[in-house]
Amino acid sequence: MVVEAIKNGYVIDHITVGNAIKIYHLLGLDNIDCEVALISYVKSKKMGRKDLLKIGKLIDIVFDKIAVIDPDITINIVKNSKIIEKKQLEIPEKLINVGICNNPRCITSSERNLDQIFHLVDRKNKIYRCHYCEAILENSKIA
Amino acid sequence: MREKKKKNLIDIKDLSVKEIDDLIKVANDIIEHKEKYSHKCDGKILATLFFEPSTRTRLSFESAMLRLGGKVLGFSDSASSSTTKGETLADTVCVVSGYADIIVMRHPKEGAPVVASKRSLVPIINAGDGGHNHPTQTLTDLLTISREKGRLDNLTIGLCGDLKFGRTIHSLITAMSRYKNIKFILISPDELKLPEYVITEVLEKNHIEYIETNSMEEYMNELDVLYMTRVQKERFLNEAEYVRLKDYYILDKSKLETAKEDLCILHPLPRVNEISTEIDDDKRAKYFEQAYNGVYIRMALILKLLEVL
Ligand SMILES: [Zn+2]
Figure (cartoon, rainbow over the protein chains, first blue to last red):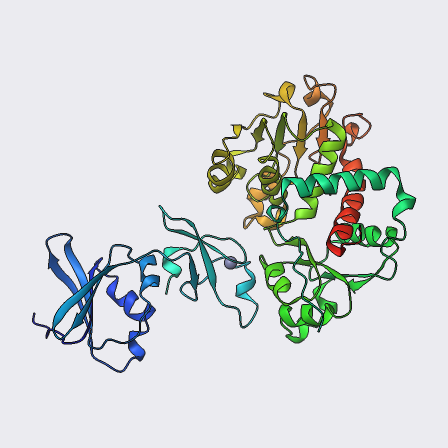
């Protein structure tokens, strides 16, 4: 399958198969004014199979929050058809409106206008806890 | 605009060991010299916002404020608050904080006091948020242990009953883990064992010695403190499971045969069957003292948060 190379933009590489669609939504790529290619199940030397996302414009994007889904992702910044920078992601200390608290007794389940806030409590195991009720953020509740 | 105050008590971890020691000192002084404190809060108002009923806790706070010479106002269940009209917690607290000098709140939702403290102009005391925190119960427990044993370090503490859902147990473990040479005997049926995260994030992280057992008698002779808890019906999804576990442990005279002469038996109350009434006259039963102590430590806390000492 051939997907056109991009001139200016980003290539999000080394995404675990199946995660590209989650990252697409988490970054709000459905709401931007440029071409986006989502390619799944691509052959990879390092990973066997992987997903890829190509964004056809150098828009302002804060990528760190996608580290919650896939910490080993590489962000390639492309300018004039050349990769000018490769970025690894940092796991963020705090997540705002990235995940939803799964605890039915949490105040976020009833109070209106509350941000969903989580704090990193265990970097090694990527564990976040709810700012309000301290419940652990479950992977299925991200994005 | 009044300046926003930052002092609150939402989680027992909000207090340093030094602050807890100071509160215990003040509470002990109040017990010795009640008259000295009877006008400390003249002209101050405490609001009790109980979005779910808890008569015992509310009366304990109201008694504390009245004994300090202050006044109280509030509501005792959400039916009499504006929440039923769809008002957010943030708005309710924002309004009430203009009517009072300090707010005590109990709420069925976990984390509610965090939301409240952000909007309140006055200090917030968490009097229980769902199954999450209940720091003034823990302060009460610490005051009682300190008064009965003369120390908060070098203790073997038995925790018995529902260790899974019992928030007072989790808070007490967290608080006691900061003192030297503490050992816990965790007594529970397999279904109600202490959650794994409390073991890893509190006990193992602080290198605290602990033993898990389902026998109440096995380590009885080692205990300095025995903390009993009630198995709470509302925590179970399945009625049959509750019925099977509710009377798993009943403390009676025969169970205390090997216990130390100076064992201190505690219970956050209300009890159901887990402590036989035949124990009530035993000099080691301290759960009623514990309930009385709750008023004095709350008085000390109100004084601290209002900065009137
Ligand atoms: Zn939560």
